[in-house]
Amino acid sequence: MDRGFLFGDGIYEVFPVYNNFIFGLDSHLNRLQKGLDTINIQNPHSKDEWVKLINKIILINKDSDNQAIYLQISRGCDEDRKHTHAKLIPTVYIQSSNIRPSSKDHLLNGRAALCRDDIRWSKCNTKATSLLANTMYAQEAKENGAEETILCRNGVITEGSSSNVFIVKNNYIYTHPKGTLILPGITREFIIECAKQCEIQLHEESFSEEELFNADEVWVSSSTREVIPITSINGKQIKDGLVGPVWSLIYDQYQILKTSSDNLL
Image (tube, rainbow, N blue to C red; front, side, top):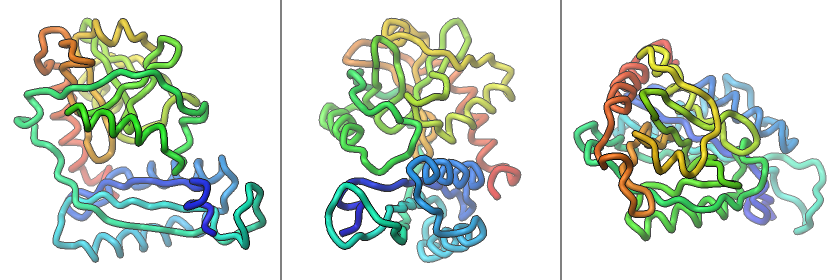
């Protein structure tokens, strides 16, 4: 009778862990709280309690330096399956998975992507567990040997099935602004910070499908994949089909940022 199982009624978060330190902990916990507030689930733990639980899971998987901690909170179990609910005790599920971020040399070949119409609901900024459309997009990409499916709503590029999307044009970086149409990615925020540190102008502005295909560079980002260069979409080559120099600078700066003690605690 758990509503997470029956209705996808819950919120989730993914915490990347490098060398047994949680990267962007506060940002992930803050996003978790916003998601819970949005769908009116009481947070079952304080920040300190969450940190202890997450670190306990990290220690259980201590043989792996790099992990992804998946945390899911559902509304809880009711007495019967019905759309409405009483006041319930939330269900918490946590797991650890090993992650092996791709090396720069491995990424220099670039990756392929698909582009499809965005048919999801209009509150994509909520990290809800009901991800049927996203999983179908991700599976289509997998079956076509692609890294990701990039989504387009009314001619405007929003995000990927499980990532944020960036383009580069004339040495300027563009990414869709925050709002209800995209998930406010934590890695997205770190990339914005990397651009500042590299003194590259980044604009949080929407861009069209046509601008995506005519970009100099295209990237996707997520907590477990970091920042991935896309060199072809729907079989069409992006620019010259090579990984671009702006991505290279951002990738290097991201590696510096994620090993800084200021961002690991």
